[in-house]
Amino acid sequence: MPQTPNVTQAVTDTFDAMSANGGRPDLAAEALALISEAEALLRRAGGLTSEAFGVAREDLVARMGVLRTKVDALAADALRRGRIARDSADRYVHDNPWQAIAIAGGVGVLVGALVCRR
Image 1 (cartoon, helix red, strand yellow):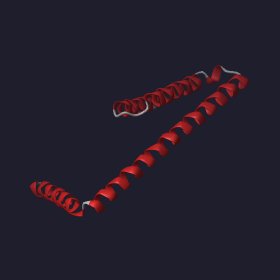
Image 2 (cartoon, rainbow, N blue to C red):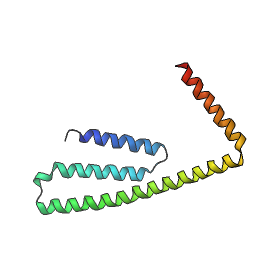
Image 3 (spheres, rainbow, N blue to C red):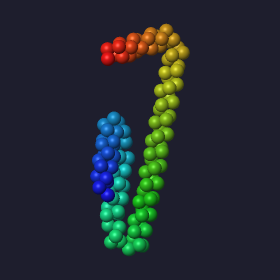
Image 4 (cartoon, helix red, strand yellow):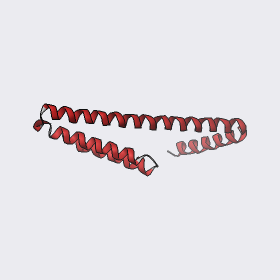
């Protein structure tokens, strides 16, 4: 189990970045608490009776289900927002084709200049 701190640190870093970018810190805190509880359960698994372990396991599984539902809702919201942005960009390009061509050309020139410099 030496990899557990690395996993926990990676999840913590991800959720810190997510919170800094306007993510859902309540979801991040809940996920970190669930990971901590799972780690604690694994550490003390040898000292638990099979009944106590089963109850703890069922509780973790139920909480993971709730967390999965929240993550799925967050993903669906991100997809919805992405579609809105895509539709908005599509509408802009259709309404302003010459501006879109100029912007694309400018980006192309910048990328070309950067590639040629190397």
